[in-house]
Image (cartoon, rainbow, N blue to C red; front, side, top):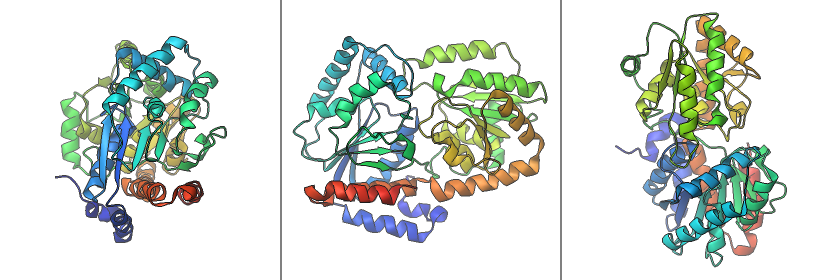
Length: 419
């Protein structure tokens, strides 16, 4: 059964739920739409799968549109993805044509006249605004990537579209763009504690799911759950595990999939498999099973997140919510979640990572204490109810303010939402 907003009271209290309901009543005549490029794989899809349902159940008509594209189109948008995260990429006039031609085709298939607000997620559909110059409603760009190291050539191209938006929403203060002269708002992402991936499951059920995958219940488990993406650095996790195995007997689980809008995924996966074949006790799982993710994050002794770049890192949020300490890099939004020596460890190299993994595996009391702190930290800051309220506040600001007051209202909203 799909959850109702009242079902979240057990996590955040009645006052928070009443605030959400009161604001939603004010917006019952509004109609909003979200546009992104994939239904599954990655944090954006995770959020939308919960957010869209909750908003509709609150009485706010909320649509979700998927961008369609050829393999060539997604090859180009992967260049955007990599370039925005700081990689040098080959970006040609042909790439621009492929991108714009596909967006023009999409603009003829998706119509937004009946909507009061349009949310565009990430760079793939960003250029749609070029073909909607006569738009009748505010358009908001929701940037989920770590873009503070953006490749100048890629950002210059995309900025021409971004500056046509009525506002932008980013996950962290450090992602705000000084050369983007539109209102910019900070809203960290969140997880749904009632989703299949995050709801409470019994230890016995979790262990049953894990054992079915051939993973021993008699050895400590170290897990990374992430797409097979070079920015998640799964090959680096294998190197960390080698150092762990030199000190203690343990096993590594790398669980992930390949998002439909990521053409590089299969190549990275092949490299990971090749490296894993050389080692004992490395398990690679591509099964898209949210309950299995839940089980692994719940029963692992340590969860690793070895990202080189990270928009926010909702897989970290998920693990911490289950009371499992996380050993992670300082990429993106991870430091907002992993508080050193309290909810996990932030590391700079593979030696530090392996040392912390060994320490946590050997010290049950430390692991338990960090786990308690971790769950409470996520409860207070990164559950779907907080992001839902922030989103409703944005809709209210942009759809109920008169045109001349929108920028002023958005600036005030920015001050309210920055944490």
